[in-house]
Image (tube, rainbow, N blue to C red; front, side, top):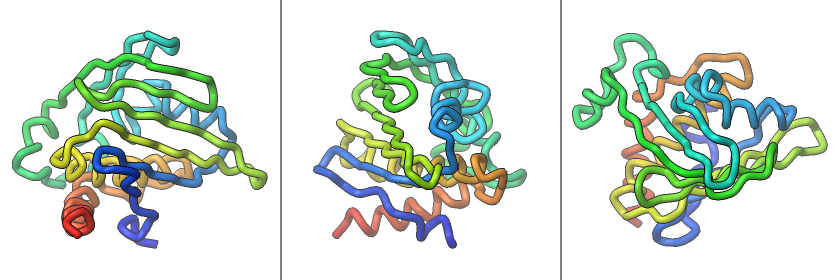
Length: 179
């Protein structure tokens, strides 16, 4: 199935988007890919988290590491693609291995919720709140692509190219949100 056809993010209100993905468990394994830098950098961003309420969360993004060799980032992201960029946040709430909520950048908040399923899979619900309309246009394809790579990693595949998928999804979400 095309990564574009995976379940879209759903707008809950004008500033909140939610994604759901079924991932291979167990729940502790998925939790590790959300919270441990060496695992998280394989699909999203490296960086250490102080896994306690009020703890610091540091993210270092280097999208060239999750894109296929030779892939070009969109012009506005080329420097970030090559050199990387980072930001700090704060852990707002945590209930290992089921929930992690944190600030994301300066103004928004991300919550990851994990729910074990009877078949051994894990439902990941990711909710990103306090987004501007402009943020939604970039964050939505970003999360969709990052979650596709997470699914690949957890399924021992490496099919998804971050920037190629992001560009396809950027157009898709732009049209979706224009309605």
